[in-house]
Image (cartoon, rainbow, N blue to C red; front, top):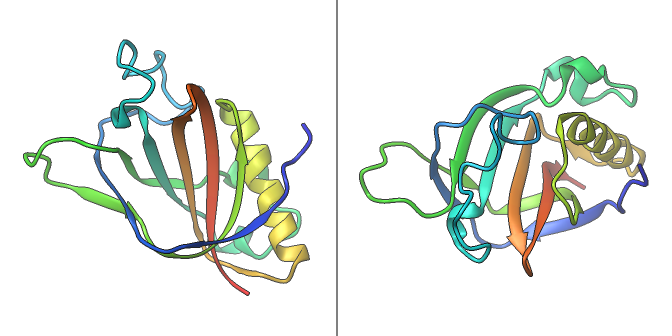
Amino acid sequence: MNAPELIHLTLRSPIEYVEARLVPFAGFFPDGDPAAGTPATDEAREFLFRFELDREQVARIDPEPAAFPGKLVFAGRRGGGREVARRGTLPEGQYAFVQERRELGREECVAMAIEQQKDGLWERLRLGNLLYIRYLFEDGSPVTQFFRPCDS
């Protein structure tokens, strides 16, 4: 896999999500897309997964693939009603950012997250122990994005 270029991204305002009862991975969803049948432009087809990475692995240039993507602490989707009790955000701030303009499977996500970490450490960024994986549709096709909080 040709790794996309690492971008230093400043997210100026948070993006809010409501909790979704999803089982992570096998692609992103175990039995296909839970939003199948909805239009590709519908924001309900946008998902955010927040993982907490093993603190020992965060600063390693050669992290263990088995430690990625870490512990799932939030899975959510855009939209939703007011009845949803738990909400989460992709907070504003500085990120090491990469994306692929396609849906990635679990192994590809792990490889991408590790490459993102290596590139960030090579650039001497102080990476946080959170990993956000965002799955959305843009211009009618899937996009997989990776955000790692960082300080330059």
